[in-house]
Length: 466
Image 1 (cartoon, rainbow, N blue to C red):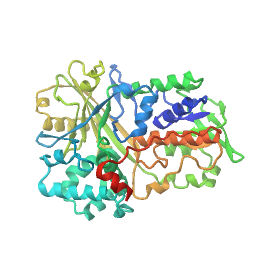
Image 2: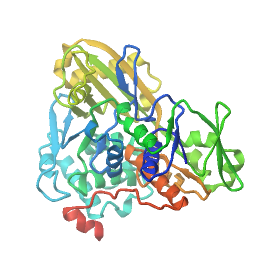
Image 3: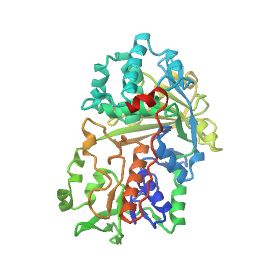
Image 4: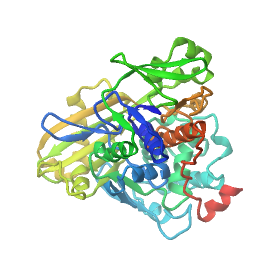
């Protein structure tokens, strides 16, 4: 069996197939594994993630993948979320003993960045989601911004609550996001189960998470090849036949999972196949959205928390990489402090220069962290992922193909396929597991791989069944 692509979708599919006893060849064109969720070394030896990726308690399949990869101990979990406003005032939110969906209400009531009328509007909005079991009837065919305004959300509530959560989670602005994606985020992460919101952050460079995948595949007699670029997928006589590599070699196999970005997949298929198969008809309609990561190294500590979510700023997150790495016995701060800032849906930054982005972020750090005003910036770098995720626009779910498309021996994986999730690491892993399930069924060895969502609890358990 062949898997094309060493991102999370390909790695999850390949490790699951290897665990099921199949011999797998995984081909990755880059010299490293992880795809868009990886890290690489700078010329001075520092390791940076292409973008900080996190997990939540509701990401059940991603947790299972980390277990398969032997990376569970490399994830730190936090049940308190920190938010900083323009003045640097920090609020936190965490769960209480109250039953869902009220388990975060006590922290929310003390949230000083929102006025009473904003909190009342938000409470009514989230209760509307909860009482509908995550499926309000007015959440279909509209943008998230339209849904919020129809449900009488104040402008401050939209800017300082809904947008803060959803742009980070979905990598898209509210006026471009299908409301159901945004509603799903709140239902699964903050309402249905008291553990859904718990934040998991890698305490090692992202690239260090995947060594166990290679070892597991090779231990089962498989092979992982990097710098192995595929230039064509050969489908003939109505079924998968082989792959053509850049070096001219042809790789044959009984079955193949293509776990590459949707635009890359289209480039690998013949015009005849694309025209014949309905699954590819709308892939060109999927658009992408950008993420920008900014890495700052200071000469002294300026942040005492593992992370901050920012209100009223361009950057949405600050991650204290020095503190995170220190929890695993590592350091990347050069005796100072290393911070990473993340800006999702960073359309306005695409045309800006590296120095302009650094200056913007340094100013925002100084606004919320007083200690940064006296600190010296030793070095900085910017990583732009212009095509980081697919854009969860209204109607985009109908353009996403399933993992099994009716071509014997050929299956699809990738967060852009039909997973029920947006473009997240959880979505990528789900796609890999679904593709592996389809391949195992084709091979006559059916097996269930998908891990169910966290169960609804408290009042949400009743509402989800109504």
